Length: 129
Image 1 (tube, rainbow, N blue to C red):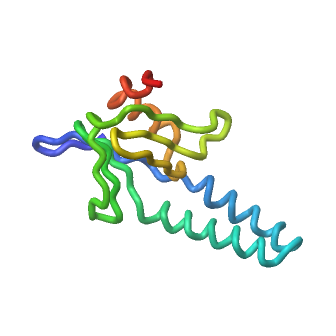
Image 2 (image 1 turned 60 degrees about the vertical axis):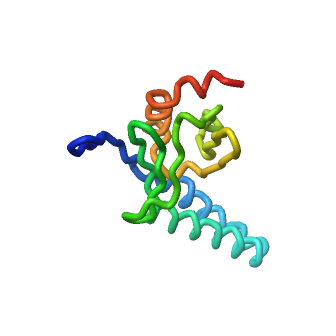
């Protein structure tokens, strides 16, 4: 957790599990079907680049998505209706619903930190249907 003069925020740690698992899966797939391995490998590289460049920041009032040092999205908690992390044995997908939109994000950050921050900042939205 980091704080400045008036703002407290938490930046989630990066997790390379999903991109590396997908890249690892691309190798045997390429041995079976080269085009399939290439498609899966490109998707794994895309996720790896996203992991390296994106940051999720939980502030007192919103979830912010940064690309390097630039805010690219801002999601105020007041607009959240529900959130889930799929699947419990191996968290791979983060879903949340706002008043006017639905969002899916691959879990490219620490799943335990993500859950802790969500329970801290958006506990009421978890209990909604």
